Image (cartoon, rainbow, N blue to C red; front, side):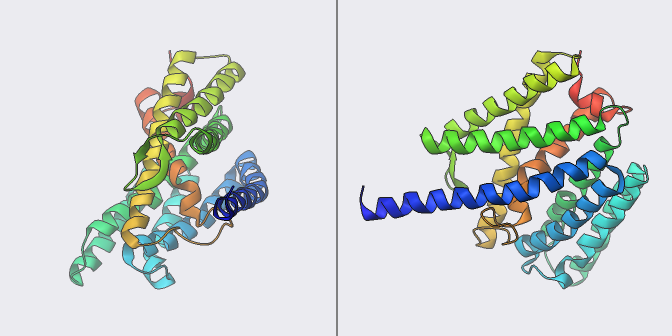
Length: 283
């Protein structure tokens, strides 16, 4: 092994250790907030909302500052408050109102409208979706744990499959490290979580849950690609520097953002009255 190859291997090993250490610190905090639910979970999402708004402003509005992200953050927090109160429709209306105000302000100052059209749904909708799903009294806790486990399994299995198998790239111009092997590995991880969840629930169709896991793998990877495209446009490697080894919060939740929206759509299609069951239990 040449010195250069050895340095690359050492760098990758060090990066992996940092990623694992960061995850070991953050994961228990996230799981505890999900477990307790209510204002604990809402508080976690409120912190995430402010951080996501700041990083999204950096990617889309040209500056990760309080001035640029204030309206987006306030809109997300107001929407969260309505969602926690069980007023999901009002939460969506608050998000739409914030977007309308941002569009009017950008139009007045001659700025392009499309960054706001991306930023507001990107930050607000997944947060409201997570609150809505967690509020299901029967399976709210289970569905959020399942979503997190699915996203984490996809990322872990995709990482190791891509690293040790390699092969053709998925979309090298957007995300040069993503491979087809990683996508298939991620599907394997999501399917494993789906099987374990079905065994735990003892209800619904296993084949349906496996099919959903496969679809959500594609959705999760699409969310990753979407954020990568935003970073490439902004000319940055990471959305921020908040989490050692991972980058910014958007680098960590890009897949979850997409999966949360996908799960909410499944719930609306199958059983909007019991959204968690609408995601997990299919005939």
